[in-house]
Length: 190
Figure 1 (tube, one colour):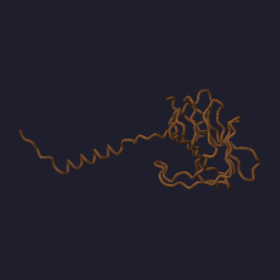
Figure 2 (cartoon, one colour):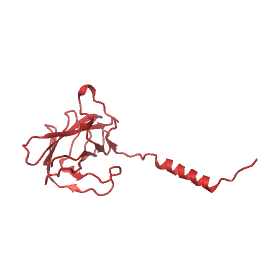
Figure 3 (cartoon, helix red, strand yellow):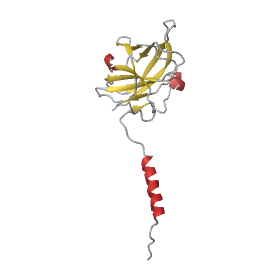
């Protein structure tokens, strides 16, 4: 029986490969992000280009204080006000004092670091008409990515798919709202 002594080169390359494999394992997080694939049956619902990204802190029924980060991509026009409509079957609750605007994180993958807030003039949640109205202190310039942060949200009692529609008005426009896209929020059932 002869045993060969492992070479330092072979051992170090094996450790290197093992380290790379371990580093490539995804990290489990509690946040729920935009689903990768959404089906729209019979032409109802937004097309792929109209779907906006989002992140839910928990995304499950029963969590008392969830946080929704609704992402708004760059727009060709400045934004004077933002309107979000949500469906009648969404029985969750929003705290209008905990709704803010912030610039999009510089690092899209990790989102670490302090993100500058965008000052807000007023926020109104109209539960009867199922609409959230947000007015920034100054118009948001064209070409700026930002997020609408809904903190202290009471998730609905049951899970499901909820369409939140975004519309904006621009300075100098007629006060007509322009549809931007839809967040297809998926709240897990358990």
